[in-house]
Length: 102
Image (cartoon, rainbow, N blue to C red; front, side, top):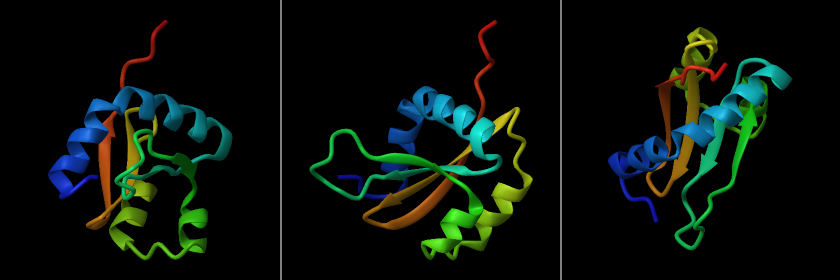
């Protein structure tokens, strides 16, 4: 179980390469969006994650205007966004993208 924003951020950083790959694919298929990761289930060893657009987030009731502001301004070539649902609520994080292998 993830308790606290620091623990959530630590988990996200340790899985950031996999999340980045999903973000690149999601951006190419859907445009701007975020990786939504559910870290709220203490029994889940491999949390569910989805690439979602701002419209999809609004449709399910996400009301975090700071997240929408970030989604409208991030640079998808250099950054990717993760919205994490944990026992403490919803947090969002902006990560620097990894250089693409050539």
